[in-house]
Each structure stands twice: as C-alpha cells, then as structure tokens.
Amino acid sequence: MAFHVEISPEAFDNLDAISNYNEARSSFRVAERWFNGILDAIRSLNEMPYRCPVTEESADFASEVRMLLYGKRRRRYKIYFAIDEETKSVRVFHVRHWL
Image (cartoon, rainbow, N blue to C red; front, side, top):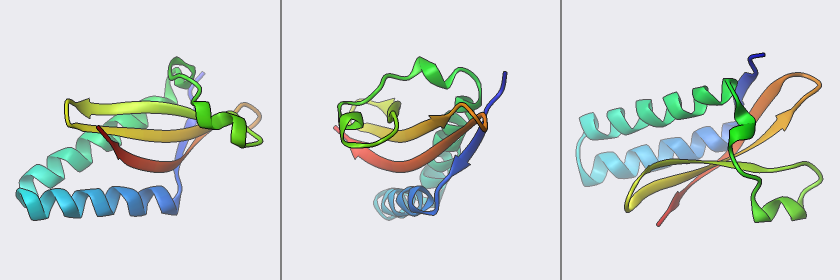
C-alpha cells in the first residue's frame, strides 16, 4: 500500500538552503539537478518507507525516526522522516549534509 509523503516547512527550508549553496558554488543547473534528484528520492518513500533504518536519535523522540541517504561521496545527505501507520503517511522533517 502506498504512503502519502509530506515535507515539512522546515525540511523545505533545509532543501532550499542546500540548493542555494550548491548554486553559489556551482551553477543553477547543478543546483536544479540536485534539487530534483533529492525530491525524487523523498517521493520514493511512498513505497516501502520501512526499507530505511531507524536512527540512533530515535531514542530521543516519542515516535520512531528513520533516515534515507541521498547522494554519493562527499555530497551525501540525510533525510529524516517518521511514518504514521494510521494515516499511511510519511513526514519528512529534516534534511542535512552528511560527510
């Protein structure tokens, strides 16, 4: 069964900041390609979100926090999200760079 994927305003702010950084360091085209790629990765959570591991940080929260990795080498990013089985939704709440 497919899940509905929601991206929080905070996560959109994270994506926007990373995209702006990529544009400043490279070009609009590179930033746009990265942005579209990470959005595709996030959208893929609508199928099998349980494929992603539970994070160590999950112990600090009331609900289970999972993480999807995106990118290669020094351009990897962590996408943090939670799954709500009742509403069949996935909520992405934070995106950050990871070395």
